[in-house]
Image 1: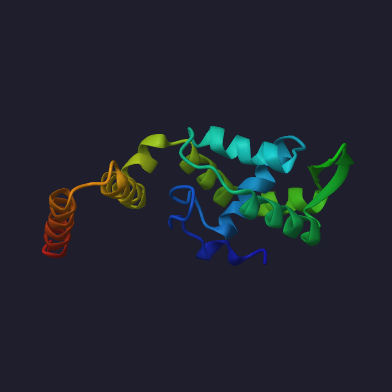
Image 2: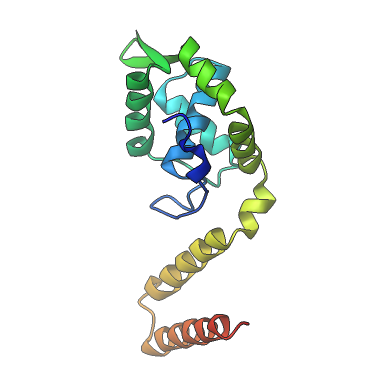
Length: 164
């Protein structure tokens, strides 16, 4: 599993907005956050949201299974902290981060560059989808308004397809 980082690339949009990175890359950034200081799952979610300028909020369904995987890999340990688990990096986790430092640093840089994410095609497509849904459902739109939205989308699709 240590050498698979060459296959990861960002992208995708699912659920809560554009994906900042795929699940494989998420493992590295979560481990990096835990290396900075021991954290609870909820803290990891909030820290990722904050570092992305509010542009990305991972779901608990993405974070908690990932924390379990990091535990299984021996990269973190979890200790009871009230009714929560506090995750701390292990020497194996530190070694894994050190082996993949360049990749981890690239992900961190990508997260902290909101201008890059604003111009990302997937981000713009996500914004378009939300605009269409909002306009298509707002105050029971008229048939004319719905047809206008369809025409804009068809025209835009044709223009994109016509690019050289």
